[in-house]
Image (cartoon, rainbow, N blue to C red):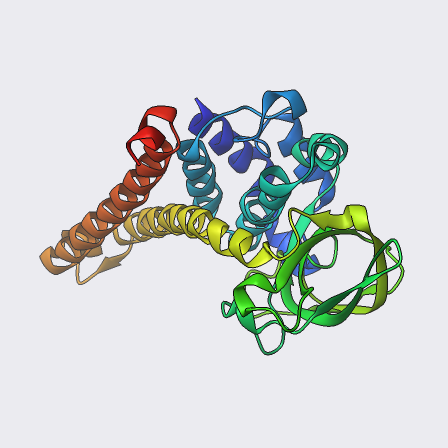
Length: 310
């Protein structure tokens, strides 16, 4: 039912308009609000905030259908919000932070971004240089972030910064929840790209950006573990998105070879073409099985019975 609902939305609300979004460089926020109203942005979040309380397989279905749209920029805009940024609030936020932000996040009224990558540090999370210095009543952030998805138009940013320069690298990073418009926080520039152009991507700057102590997301010094812990979920939904994209590419190719004629017959009538398509179809099915099985394993590991075995 979820797959059918997302597919209907993509067919009616995304495909007819997404080429224009590619030109303008972002997904309109009213589209994301409509997705929130349909429950697509809170699939795994608690019902008390408006979520659906589904499991990892629900996120996989969402990601597959978004990928199947063939507009990767649209798909990643949504998935960064649902499974890469806002999860840090759901997993590490205080009760007050969750109550304040999750209802708007799930409804699509506030869109989130994750600010970890820097000009000299990407997946090497321990190498980030942005700092957060303790100050009276809060923290002062200085540094920059690069290639931040949703970075231009997001409302909330989950920002990684070093709070203890002399500590072990894995214990020196903390996460902060910073709203757009915070003093000292600016979107330095919007970044154009070769593809995924409807995904607004930015360089961010923090210059003596002062935030209150309540902006700390989770425990101080635990940011590295929060980031690494969610990498598994990020890989899962990206894998599902790519399987949706691969399936759509195969369907587009099949449509072409069954109509394009050469040497008196369609390309599909050439045995070598059919063999190649069969091989690709098998690879896609194997990839989908891997992703779905990984999601299932994650779901099993999260049950009380499974936890007791560990």
